[in-house]
Length: 332
Image (cartoon, rainbow, N blue to C red; front, side, top):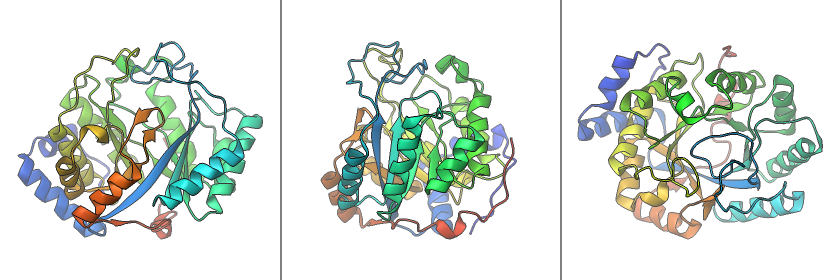
């Protein structure tokens, strides 16, 4: 197992990111095999339990109320509908169920109580449960932990230097504070970013530096490629080259050796060959199902066939549970 490092410099990360691609793939694959089971990939499902109407101004997000993106806005789903979706996801091969709500922050109200019941219900099905609900206080994080939440997703999106170019309704410190509250509650941390938003290579590596220099590395880091949506300020951004996704996954794998690197949004833009290179570079998790919150995603059968072709085995739920509390509490 590769020791983790928490004092990366920007120059070190840039040197890794700019390594010739085939050499970078080799290095990343070597780190991956030393820390993870080769050809084992977790399949997760992401369900939007409350869609649209968010007061934030995230430039990439079709769920912001201020943008005219023609998405179907709906209130919090019923418990039964979410349980049915979890059953369908499990039957499709998912071992983790992620629940997303378009909220700026969690509020202590009946909707939050309903989410806690959803977490308990999915947990009883033998699936890992992850939530992404916006900003979170320490008391709310503890309630989620007591309900059996396995992971909480709160992406930092980009570098701190570039953050205000993407979002103005919250700041970088808000992001880190929520991550810290999650960590203190004993919930595993899922936090990553998005490429293709007009950022530089420097922004990309500085985003990874923020995560890699936390006192405890996030247990999972999603690498997303922007899916441009009409009506958002990012609607006309060019598609991210597959080589950039591969390079980003490989860099993340090297600097976060024991973390699950999640190949997330934008997978529809990658053919099977590009995805295979991402898996070789160290990606060991995907989101399956025909939709990621509001954007298109490959269907279960497509991914199942890809796994057969590439010789990939789905990872069981709670396979990493022994590692869950094997680290100190992080403070920000």
